Image (tube, rainbow, N blue to C red; front, side, top):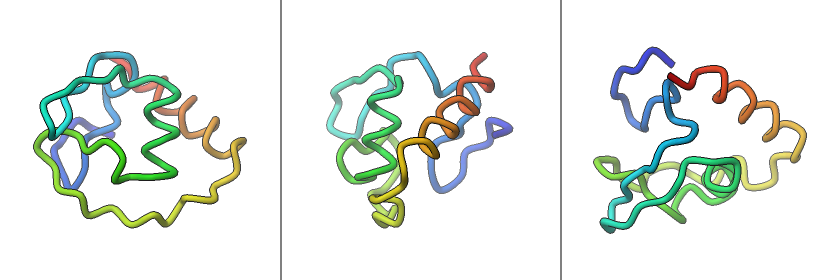
Length: 77
């Protein structure tokens, strides 16, 4: 959450802007994108990162996903 590059993209400033994907396409980092990324991390790989995240949270309840998204929104720059 501090903006440092790690295994995956930082959450700092993630919510809202266009994100370039590994295939060169772009997507808006909105609720739908983040939800899909939690359920199926391989669906849209963020440019510069590898497809290594397991589908650990494929069955995460929607209320928990909403809480994570609300937190990520607080980190928007």
